[in-house]
Image (cartoon, rainbow, N blue to C red; front, side, top):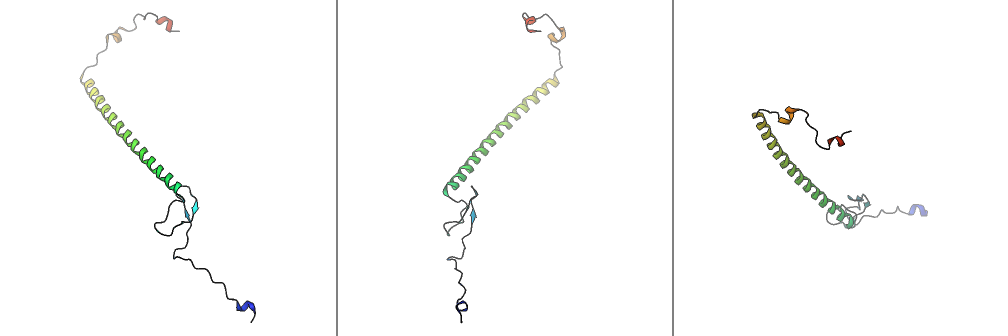
Length: 120
């Protein structure tokens, strides 16, 4: 037999664990990475800095949402109070007859002192 026939095909190396190393993508920066530890839940971030930045962004978004909700509540209170006062004024105006003021009845009157200087 020749040397070629005596050689057996090289055995493929078996992975040490049942899980093969899987390539993951960082949720924060989008960098592909291989998780360093095989135990525990699969990591979402490539490094601690990305994890911290993602946490800071979640906190910031939560604060913005809280501020927006507070502003909406304040606006609702303002509009509700305006609606009540304007509807009350409208009812009162509807009950009372409309009277023209003396200035509207008289028409154009004397000019105010210094007015001629303001007109062109």
